Length: 127
Image: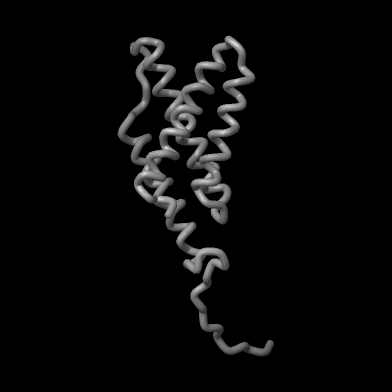
């Protein structure tokens, strides 16, 4: 078998922003780390908590985990796009769940996602 000379790695540039293609990966890692810290800090809900707190904490933890999974499953997509897409889905599910228990769950998930999206944008994480 013929040995080829080593290939020198070039810094890849994004055609639209002139930045490294790895910046998107870094941004995703920052978001995943922040969400992981959120999960660690909030802790598991306890069975003796009032129902409204139990549902709110468990739902916010669930949607944080779903968002982390979605970001890790799509490493080439920006965390901002993934978060916005998931927020739109939760908004649609909330609107479609008329007066059911699912309505509250999707309402909490939707609220969390839009708040986190706004927070990350204010902190210039996506820039």
